[in-house]
Length: 120
Image 1 (cartoon, rainbow, N blue to C red):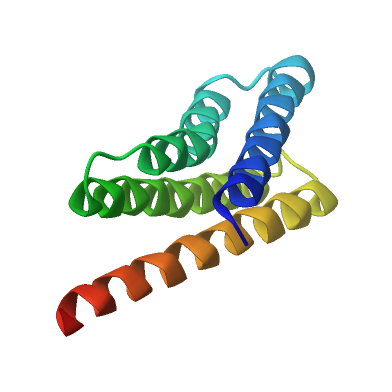
Image 2 (tube, one colour):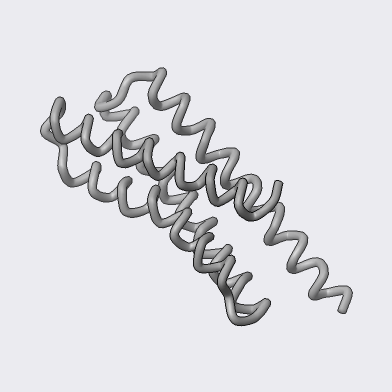
């Protein structure tokens, strides 16, 4: 997967997260958790976008690592929202599938980059 395809995937996920926040605010009157998941969920793509414009390999790795951490946080908030019965299972499953896929790609990229540093 090239950088623009992955960035498009991150943007599509951010759009879903924004729609989730709208749903939570309009139907559940839930603002605190919805704000938290919006921040972490949209930050994944923002940090990846910054990584694509990094000034060095170390900067690139750092931004990818932040994106990975934001993916972990998003997984946490999705579990909280689902466990609190604020989102239906279908929506939870869809978003978890997306964020897990994004997380796996970020993790694999970081592993590859760190392994190449060890070989240098």
